[in-house]
Length: 285
Image (cartoon, rainbow, N blue to C red; front, side):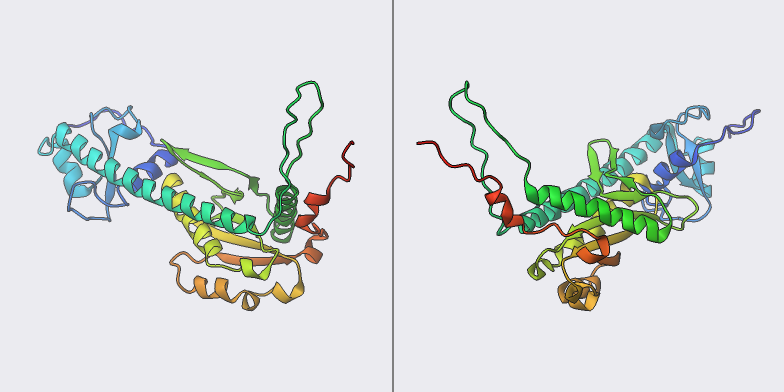
């Protein structure tokens, strides 16, 4: 068995977390299943080489076998590859699921919104005008006000619109709070329910999918916070949103639901359909 004269260099917590997440917090040897007394092993036996590709999580038994040469480097590399393939496959499935839910949500949000198209003038010498969609601007405004209110109520600061990537996988969130002093990081999403028919199962499924994708990418435990912005007091409790309430009973990762009214936020976005009447310019004869 190989021995070392120098003490083991420390492995940063972020690397340890990535290796543990990749193997599901269990020994990397196929069908071992041991999840206690786990140790990180350097595949090439170079303890200064702390690249993720050189690190594998082993139980005490298989760690000793690796150092004794009973499990050689090639076998460890193959175990590592199997883990990596399985991890990437699961991450891909979760990302696709989240993308599908986000797409469904956007389709629902855009229903019944009348939009006047900005049609470019065919004459390049004449001025043209393009405008931002009122609905999106109002949504963004409500989102930022709601996040600020949540921050003040809980005495914390959220990072806005973070993106987390690992390889080709990426997840974008409305806000996040990463804090080792908390039991779980906070994943915060804001949804505007301007009409009662927008109470659907999609929003709970989205925050659940965002939370598990965040956990898989970062290796950190997350807790979903779903903030609803609603127009009136009659939609302010979870009992007023029965479809959301029913969906909460079905999901494995249950988010916290926070509901703010326009009055709570001190901002009323007005009618979205008003954007088709934004200009009142008479056509030239």
